[in-house]
Length: 118
Image (cartoon, rainbow, N blue to C red; front, side, top):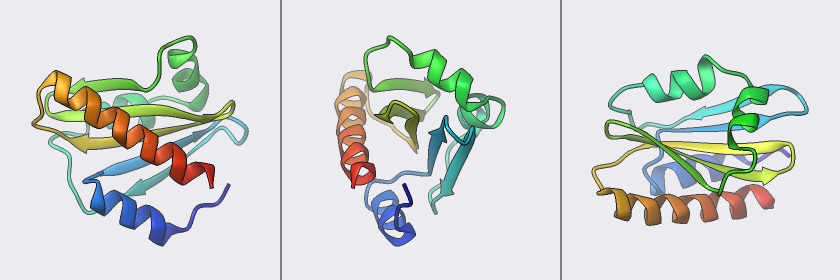
């Protein structure tokens, strides 16, 4: 599904998202949108997206409680499932404590699923 770039950019800006990556297991491609916000390090993004593939990412969350939240230093990735063949990954910088970040990540995931379900 094609999402309006203006809508995605507005979402990223209003939610302080540095990078959105959609994993499409039908095309075997990642669709990446980089915002204006920078991450502290791009190690987590490299590990989960650039040095991986859609099969590996989808397999890594199979059977897991969603959203999955990955953290490296102050950089966070929340991974949600749009449908059986697509995941959405939001990368952002966070100074929140673990419990606060958990609730924030769930909120981001819920917003993303609504956005991509349109």
